[in-house]
Image 1 (cartoon, rainbow, N blue to C red):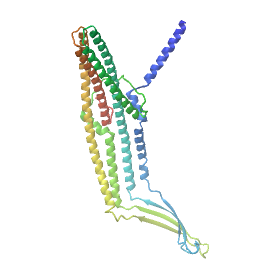
Image 2: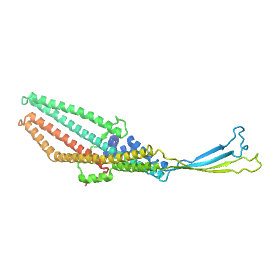
Image 3: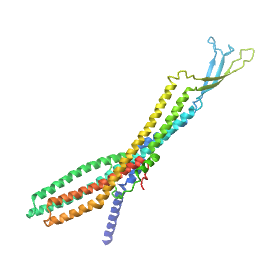
Image 4: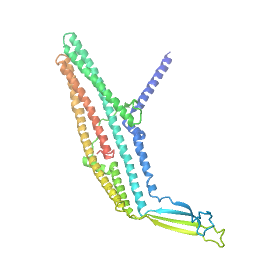
Amino acid sequence: MFLLNKVILLVLLLALSSIAKAETSNVLTLQSAMRIAVQDNPNLAQIQARSEAMAAIPSQVGTLPDPVISFNALNLPVDTFDTAQENMTQLQGGISQVIPFPGKLALRKQAAIYQAEAATHDVTDARFHLLRDVKKIWWALFYLNKALDIIITNQNLLRQFVKIALTKYEVGEGLQQDVLLAQLELSKLLDNELRLISSQEKAKAQLNALLDKPANRTINISEQTPEDLPTLLAELALFEQAESYRALLASRRDSIHAAQSRLDLAKKGFFPDFKIGAFYGGRDDTLSNRERADFLSLKLSMNVPIFAASKQQKAVDQRSSELMQQRYALQDQWNKVRAEISMAYSDFQQAKKQVVLFKSGIIPQARQTVASMLAGYQVNKVDFLNLVRSQITLYNYEIQYWQALTQANQALAQLTAMVGKEEIYE
């Protein structure tokens, strides 16, 4: 019997261990969320596919047009359609090739290469934006989980307060309004819990969408997260890094180079393209008293840009305007990047100071106040209203601490996306 009990106990321990491992495996850490998003996000995949498609263009536009093979019947008499009746009748075969003016193919290819490189940079920038969104939503869920834990803890405390107030009221040492006050505050916490659960469900749906998962899929956020915040580089240093590393700015620069190549190509439009060909004509000499010589024909032609003022010049004007547009777009984007870096930098610094203040000063003091109030209330030295207020104040400070920590990490996510680099710390 003793051996049977040991076996049963061992089986229960193994089952509990497997359950714990399963729960741990279902925990979504920030790093695993980022990895899944990069692998599975469909929007990032379609941007990557577009980049791959753009990479296949340069060799196409930089290659000569396909040659044309032709077969002709020349000077064929329509009364008999006899190829031996007339001396000039011939059956001809030939090949012709269009040759653009020197430099045109190279400029077309160059413009396509720059556009392909811009598309590659767009993939990198889209990846940073995706990671930013994942980080922000993950931290939002982290905060909501912490807030719900605090609310549940405070609900239990207020229920104890209700019991204490009710007991004191029943023995004539307390007031009914104390009981009603505690019940009111407990109802407020229940209302806040409902609001947070609703926000939590929305955030889970958003994160599942980024991970390419069903919107109602259960997500368990890891709560074992370091609370220490890094020291950032100076704001000016972040500007310098963004100028070097931000993929969006590199994409804009490549777009400028592509526009310049298209402008140079438009200027080449004033020069003609050529078409060369060689044709061999065979003549039928079966009815002739002498052998008829075959013919070789060579052909050279070119287009004449006689409508340059309304066509080629307008093309140059168009490409010039497009080049200016790309230059203005780069400057505008650079201004936005610096503004976004400054805002995120300011948000991080403010949130970091709040985290330190709440963690090292306000929350410990508030906890001491609650403990002192509770001890004083139990010996009738503190009224119930002040006790409840001190506990609600502590609850608010704890919520604000986790909110500040979340905002600081969300600002970090924004900064790394705007700079285009993960290493932005001292």
